[in-house]
Length: 310
Image (cartoon, rainbow, N blue to C red; front, side, top):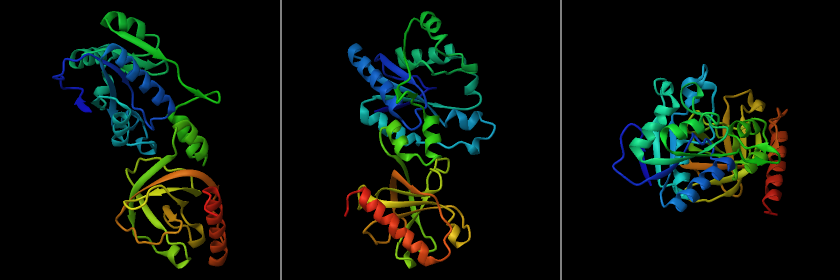
């Protein structure tokens, strides 16, 4: 798969069918749109192309960019595009200056530099300065630029439009199972195992503390979850995931701790991915370590039952 710079004309002369967007999370609505691009490109014997942005426009335009958290990284999105059959990604470096480009100028550059003659866009998608590219202006843009623009209505699940913002809200409400329905897969986080205070080990539940990368990644709300963990030696094995400040021990800094069931090897420095499958409970302040241990045993029993390990 080719990755090209929006500002540099392509050497390829092959015509293309493209869509435009950030595609944060690559949820089911995104997937539906992307497959429309791939199928339509096949009928025209052209390249299926994605035009995307980095960093996320909200991280540049928001008055409080540090508060914005995302569902996926650019590398994850590009890997997904490659996996499903997108043959080219055109990467636009998003800046405040870039945000001032009008939709017609933006499209004209794409047409001239990358031989795109068809765009497939969501009806709720906007782009260009002051949202000058939108479902109302698409017909005139298509006529003026002599291209095709096809609009796809948002996908709905259970009567609700699938959107990245809706999925973010589900995750910060601990609704990881519902988020999985809209994403089409479990929500995932990944990072490296760092040395913690080894308190879990003394309690009989050795946990791996994870430093999540990047820091603007959305972390589900505090609580205990059951999920799956993958390392260089393990693939999707059952685990308990605890997110929070461990109030029993005096409200420590927030941590993400993973207890891999039936596994006790040291993982310091290893890369680990976790998938969220089910919310179990909120954080609890226990009176003593014995009460905490008993509750952790109950959490483990819940996870083992959930994954059919009994």
